[in-house]
Image 1 (tube, rainbow, N blue to C red):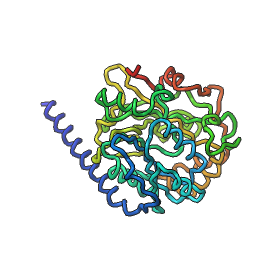
Image 2: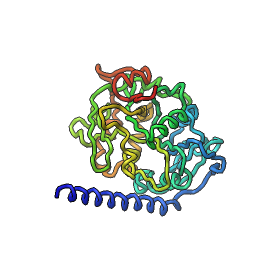
Image 3: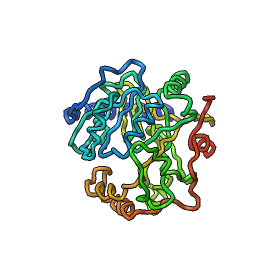
Image 4: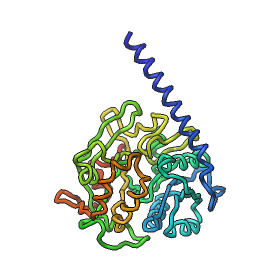
Amino acid sequence: MPEPRLGLRSAYLAYKLRLRRRALLARAFRRRHELARVIDSTASIQPRDILCFMCVRNEMQRLPFVLDHHRKLGVRHFLIVDNGSTDGTVRFLADQPDVSLWQTSASYKASRFGMDWLTWLMLRHGHGHWCLTLDADEILVYPYWQTRPLPALTDWLERQGRSSFGTLTVDMYPKGPVSQGTIGPEDDPIAHLSWFDPGNYQVQVQPRMRNLWIQGGARARAFFADQPRRAPTLNKTPLVRWHWRYAYVNSTHTLLPPRLNQVYATDGGELTSGVILHTKFLPGITDRSADEKARAEHFADGAQYAAYYDRLTADPVLHTARSTRYTGWRQLEALGLMSRGGWI
């Protein structure tokens, strides 16, 4: 008798998740009208091209390096939504031959923090492609990334029967106050943000969506020590061989259908994984935090994060005696933050 009952529960959950996925796709379809085309070069996309999707606002400090880094990894086309930039971001992106650009002044929060817009673009242009979804302050690294571009990684994943690739977000920070120093748009931000927390990561498996839930790192330690459950989620699945029926549920932390979230081994082994180097704490973060607190567009309940923004505006020092200087992907693997799996 328990087996049939369990089977019915599983079938009901699968039905509910299927309805949720369809609802997310319907939301994206409705919100497509919020996007105004600036530059559309999608006709140049070739069948095997790896695509990158972003939603940005006032990111001129980061975009030249971020685009160049991911071009070198093997991204062939960037599909970007600009949400009201005033710092030259639109002009810069419109001049890039491998960028298709849309603009919107609609609410970032109401669009599920940009995911409705990006879901529409992936539905329209991403089907059949490996799609990398990032924020402008995220830099993807993975085993052998300097010598093996993304097509080598995606070929390996396909040979393993995998359609998705998981990462851990690692917060990078400077040794002194977060406002210190200067950095140019084409400079490597990791030369400035050279430090990270090597431990204090907590991992749980969420059975409903089959995803990992990872918290910890510098933001949890510095800003959420008294409320660790409210700390940012660090697990992401940013690289997916896309199908028009797929949808991200919560940023790139979870996907539907749930099988795409199983980017970890369940047999005691390891699957190949990467790290997103998070460059949030560049100079200018204090002014930006004050602006984002006033806009209240980045969190579902902005009041709960008021203290977080206030502490950022106060120009904190995130470095501690336990901080570790970043030296490369092999160091991250040795610390257990990424894995080669069977990719040799």
